[in-house]
Image (cartoon, rainbow, N blue to C red; front, side, top):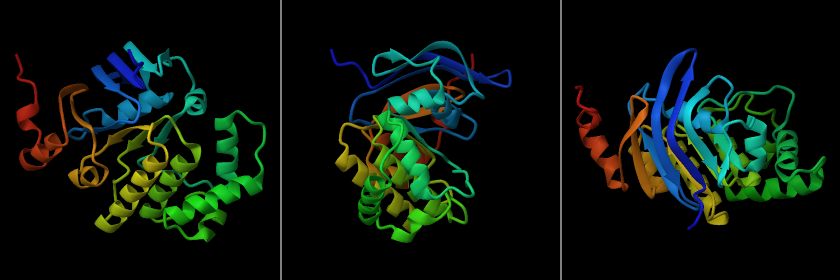
Amino acid sequence: MTTPLLELRDLHARADGVDILRGVDLVVGTGEVHALMGPNGAGKSTLANVIMGHPGYVITGGSLMFQGHDISSWTPDERARAGVFLAFQYPEAISGVSVVQFLRQAIAARKGLDELSILEVRLDLMEWMDRLGMDPAFAERHLNEGFSGGERKRNEVLQMALLAPALALLDETDSGLDIDALRIVARGVRTVRDEHPEMGVLVVTHYVKLLEEIEPDRVHVLIDGRIETSGDATLAQAIEERGYDELRPVSS
């Protein structure tokens, strides 16, 4: 039996003493794309952050397995080196650190190296920027400083391409993007997946338009900290048309 890439069983988590995840069950296989939808406050971004090991969240029950290993006690950098990647909803700007400098350090850490040739990084970076339709001058700009929303999200996709994670968590990558920028970002995600077909992806989103571009294998609906239902891509379209009310659990 093949070991799942990501396996959550009855996962509970809280932040600031408040229970947010209340028993999440989710299995993502190698090469699969899963979408996580749900109303505001359901716990979608919390789930992505818990998988990544954000210190603001505490796991209070259940299990979090990655490639057959319990990673619940691993630090975020240990998870990142092992191949877990999180594309942030609101990427932070880092003044004084260029995109190429940042990626040089990140890729070296991912590969377990003390140092990486700047020439090697720059060659790979230029190749991927060309494939993603990005201006080469982008590499010398300070990380996310003065970037538009679309540029910040494309930079996240660029990082994903170069780091080649086993599992990519995309936390509302479509947030704040117009339709043209969304298509560019989605096209970038598809390009990375074509290069790394074994990469698993968990997309947190509110919008069907992104899923039309990325085409998930499974769609899950998170409500009040639990996955209430799952289905194929047609579930996202049904939510677009009818909303979440009929999927909410009936109060006893």
